[in-house]
Length: 235
Image 1 (cartoon, rainbow, N blue to C red):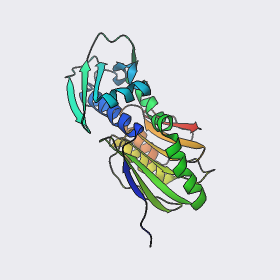
Image 2 (image 1 turned 120 degrees about the vertical axis):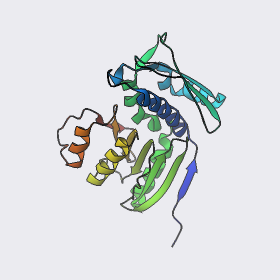
Image 3 (image 1 turned 135 degrees about the vertical axis):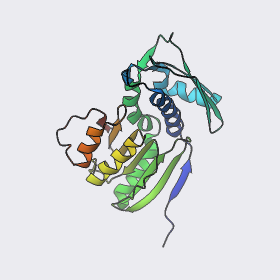
Image 4 (image 1 turned 90 degrees about the vertical axis):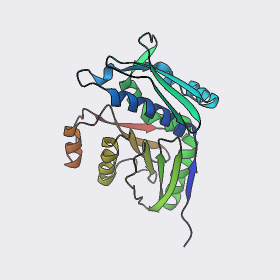
């Protein structure tokens, strides 16, 4: 029996996701329910991928937020890169944190589409599925699954995705169930990918109890969720 493929690597998407995830975590951890979470503002720069990569390469990432609740400046380090998240009421060019949640699904596809498509192509040729795990330390793990199946372990990651053969750009019921578990534990997105399409389930804010129950009860046909969103990406 041949050894299954596995790889751990640092990619543009894995590094950017780890930093934006840290930003979101700090805002969510300090959030005061007397306010609307989407009142949190962040610098528009966080959605400028070229600028984010420049900051990453320089090793110093300064991020600014403006929230109406108490927020202490936060300092951390990811893979040797120094990160600061500071409150600054004078931010002029800003977006809502809601826009950041909506931007998350596109990051891997804007920065490493060739890598994603190469494994999707392998699945189309062999029917062997692959799992991508973007972790909070700035790394991507790629793991080989099985024939038309991949076992998704419950590991708290930022974003996970797995390949399907071309023409099957959709979630299975188990995919959705494991996905909502990831989102409810702080993950940001989960996706199914093919050679030409991806479908992404992601959270917009904190997962509500009602949304979680609807998903687990399989009541999601033609349902509008408050905190869970779906988007399809064609490439």
